[in-house]
Image (cartoon, rainbow, N blue to C red; front, top):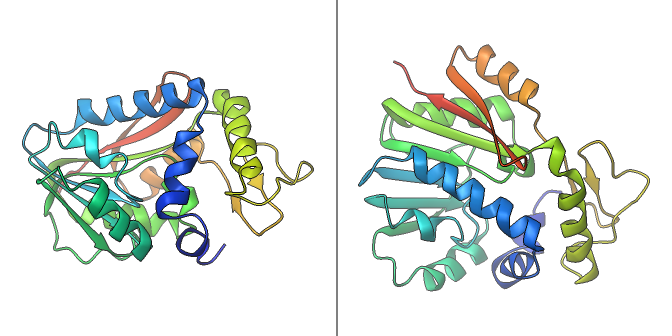
Length: 225
């Protein structure tokens, strides 16, 4: 998986994944962003970890004062700057979400959505701790993953991506129980509500687990210093 998103699934190829999304996945993506929009403060400073080419940043610009996105793929950053060129209140930076180069308490809200906590293949505790570190007192950190109830819809979408050649062929024997495995080395798991709770509790955080539209699970953290 090392370098998969920088070498194979970035920029136009990543955008294509969303272009072929089924109606169920389109609804899931819309509802996920809707939950984030409810949580971010008007005119606030927002950071997205693992922003890709800025797909989720675009709707957030309508409410936030300024939106920063970080991603490890230089191709995403370059493509995203063109994708967001009309959104003047954005900035894209090439940076690892697990080692964000920002000072403590800088952002009003930090988000890591669409299963980034698993897709990044970074230490989950480190991701959560660092996200909290760079969020102000009273601010919010949002992590999301897929609901177990959305497994069939999610799997259908990944099969479509594989058929397009965006991913390798899906290994039907290994793909199960929230884990998707392809024959080109791609593998991604799912974070459960119990997993989110264990992470947040272990870090002593004030959190709430919310299922949105039977498709995504959020761990909403309120930062307390």
